[in-house]
Length: 290
Image: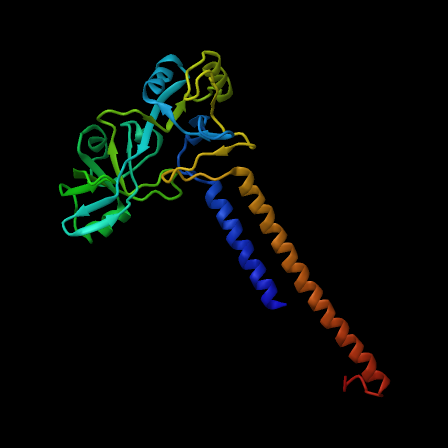
């Protein structure tokens, strides 16, 4: 009974901790309720929403609607190997982003300058954890690293910033550079003015027939419908909210079952003891002996 209760409490604790962590992603960002990912229907798979917007379309949306204060475009970079001297790491998480990144998510540079990295070609910022693996404790500012893509092509970057880890961050990456060259498109985040209605803006974008990836379809979404699937991106930390609530309900059910089992087994043991007391009394045992 004790093992059953302990396992139940342990599982409940893990599930509740997971729910709290996932539900409070970017909790430290004061204006997170004003940030929305612009999504559209996938042209490849029915019922799937993709976080992709053409680069020109993103700029058009920013200029057209006064409710939007800033946009943040980003995308994954083709990085098969990260090489520094003789140290190699395969498949690092490498992304590029606009210079507006810090207006959405507040990153602190332990060394160097993030704004310089995001506006200067061939400069790169490295996460605190990845920097420890790459430089083994010494400062990496000014060092040159090589990124080798799947085709074997090599691109050299100068380390311009080491970024402090952010707890419960929406973005996950090892390496970050700015969008300074040709950019075709990618996931786009919008930041609205305080008090602006996201649902009304969504309807405006649809009504104005802003083009999407699918010809003839002008549907953009700020939130994924509960019956739709969301495209998975390795650098986005995102969970399905209904599934999170299912996990929380499961945690409460596990706790209830564990408590019920413990109580049931304890009562069964008590009933056996009462039965033994009756037998002892019938055999002539005194109260002191019982």
